[in-house]
Length: 78
Image (tube, rainbow, N blue to C red; front, side, top):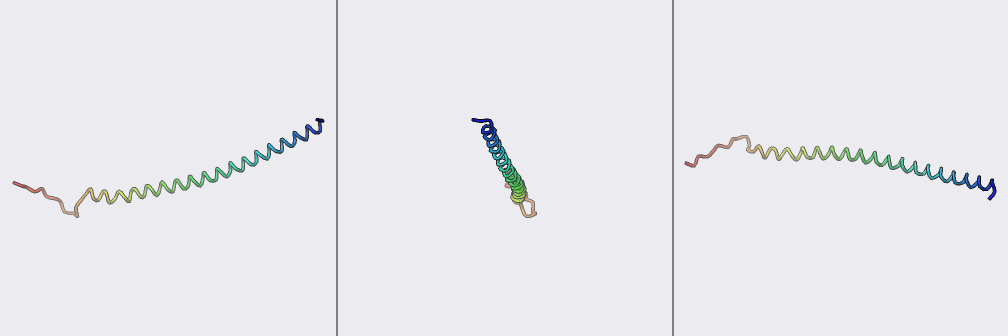
């Protein structure tokens, strides 16, 4: 193999490596974009779950308080 052939092959290898790096960087950028979207969706979901828990807890709390405003009197069975 001559010096020129060796240099040409080396240049092709460098070009191929450069292409791989650029492709990998583009893929990484896409993954980052998808991750940011997922984080935003997760945050909205957590907010919605917190609101749902609060709205479900209100009727449970009202049942624990009981009654319709009247107090229950103790019944004397003697």
